[in-house]
Each structure stands twice: as C-alpha cells, then as structure tokens.
Length: 445
Image (cartoon, rainbow, N blue to C red; front, top):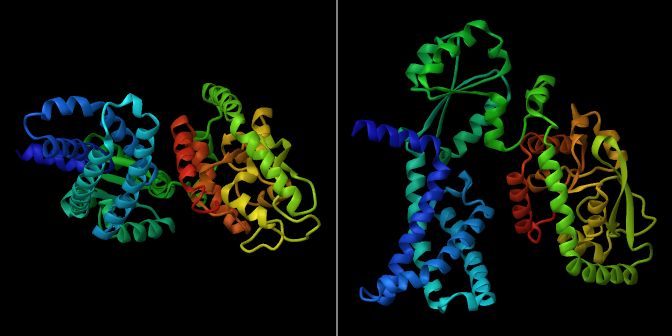
C-alpha cells in the first residue's frame, strides 16, 4: 500500500496536466451515463447507450479540442474556485454552441435529437468537472504532492522563477535555492527530498558539482538546465542565459521532411480557401478604394529566409503620405476607419496568400520584419538566427506578445521566436493555428 501511494504521488508530481485531461474524459463519460440513466431509466439504458455512443464520442472530441484551445490544460486554469468555474463555464458555452451547430449541419448522420440530452449533459458535466478541477487544484497545492526542486543558479532569472512559483501554487512546485556556503549538495538533496535539480552554466563548470550530479543519476533525480526549466514555465527562451553553444545544440535546420510537407500542405490549403478568400478580397478592395485615396494593395519590403528581401502584400490600412514612426501605436491617426476593422480581424493580410504561393512566407513562422526595422534589431544578440526559417503570417511570438513598438519589446518578443525555432513541428504549428483562430476576434496581436 505504501508503494502504491508513493507511485501515485510521483504520478501527480510528474503528470499533473495529463491527469487533468484523463479526469475530464472520465467525468464526461460519467456525465453521459448519468444523463442516459436519468432520462431513459434502467430498462432502456443499454439500448440508448448504443444509440448515443457515437454522437457523444464526437461531442467529447469537439469539447476536448475547445478546452485545449481555451487553455484549460495549463496551470493558469487551476486558480481559485471562482476562476475555475468562470473558465470552464465560458469554454462549455462555446462547446455547447459549436456542438449544436455541428449536430444541426450533420443531423442526418446522427439518429437522435440531441438538444435536450446535450443540455442535460452540459449542465451535469459542468457541475461535476468544476468539482473535479477544484479537487485537483487542492491536490496540486498539497505539499506532499509537490515537485521539490533544488536550484543551483546565480542568475537573476532565479528570482523571477521563484516569484512566479510563489504566486502560482497550483504549479505544485516547492523551490529551494542552494547555498553552497551553508550545506553540501548531497545534504540539501536529502534534506528537501529533491526530485529535480535545476542548474545554470556557472555551476556546471564546477567539477565538484558535476561529479556529485553524476553520482546522483542512479537516484532518479531529474537534472535540468536553468534555460530548459525557464522555458518550460514561461514558454520562451531567456536570451540572457544562452550563448553560441546553445544554438549549436538546440537549433537545427535539418528538418527537410517537415519543411517540404509543410510547404505542400500550405499550397493545397491556399487553393482550397480561394473560393472564400477571393469574394471577400473583392469586397475589401472595393471598401478600401472608396473610403480613402491611394492604392488598394500595400507593398512593403520584408526580410525573409536567409536574409533574402521580398515584397509583402497587404490591403492598405493607412492613409497615403502620412509621416510617422516605423511602428504603429494605439490610436494611430494614420490608420483609416476601414483599416481599423481590417487590422482587428486580420483581413488586411489576405493578399499574403499570394506570398505563400510564391514561397516567400509560410502560414506559421516568425513574423517577417520590415527591412529598416530588421537593421535596427540587429543590435539584439543573435537576432540573425531568426532568419534560418521562412517567416509566417502568424507565429508563436504574435500569439504570446503584443506588437513591439520599441527595441526593448522587440528583444522580449524575439525570445518567443527562439522558442518556436527550437520546438517547431506540426504539433506546435497546429496549436498556434487553433489558438490564433480563437484570439483573432478578441484582440489584435
């Protein structure tokens, strides 16, 4: 029994968000069973289960996708009970609306009238899942289920990590800073029951420390660099913590299958969307033309892959002949009335499908900068590495950081680009696409 409890504790420590996902699936299945039993009773329960299992399986898939897009599988989703209820209720409202739409469109494929059952399922699941997530949050913050992490680092980022962990107890992390003057590394590991050690470059260069860490490998203690740990918490690469060797180790351009397959998919998707984008483009072009003087299409030189310049095409959103800074800012008077709407909905970027077909850009990648701005940004350390991949219409940095208006903000944003360069994959691209679709009409990013 002690061994089972110990294994359960380790499972919680290492797979908190995975447990949340499995729990949601379990709660959904339980909610379906409750609804069917209440609605049809014991006699018809089995028959009704067989009738409902396929459509409700589709509902489950839809809901899980929407939950994922809505950040319900991040630690931020496990705040207090009010925050949990608010997040889940909002996501369920969207899920219910999408599901009703799907059932209506594909009604002939489902042999049931889902409205009453779906309402009952949504309410039942909502109540049970709020309780489940709140119980899980209580487990996350319990000291017994915390990941005990010892930090061997002299970096300023250590305090930033510590502050973040203290303000987010749902992370389930107990952080201990190693003081080599007061105790030995072995004693600290034993005293704090450490299951993970985070170390920076300075301590890695200490032979005595690395020898001790080597001896600990057999004790199943996870050893992580400060950069990797920081990345796992904040989802970007701390620029001040990396040097050239990090790029050699982590950034590779040898992803030929990924790049070529991505290119093929982008060409296919561009042609598929033409019946939708062409009519919209004609309407938008007409509105731009009649509401302000100047060309309909705005052309601007941007920096592409391998520092190669290209012409980027957008619908014009600004008045012609207006001087101003290189960056646009909130309330910028140069932007036309139609331009404000186009920027908010990102419809001004429709002509960039032509850039995608030409191979100048991808759908997803670091946002291409103006040639003049790219020259200014060269003072940011390692900024040129950004150009080893094709730029994109949308990207990880745009998803996580506001449009930069200063060199300092550009530097912060570049750290998200580094994260994408390191982790780029089809999974990350799909995640970026889905998250951007959700955010497109909620904020201009």
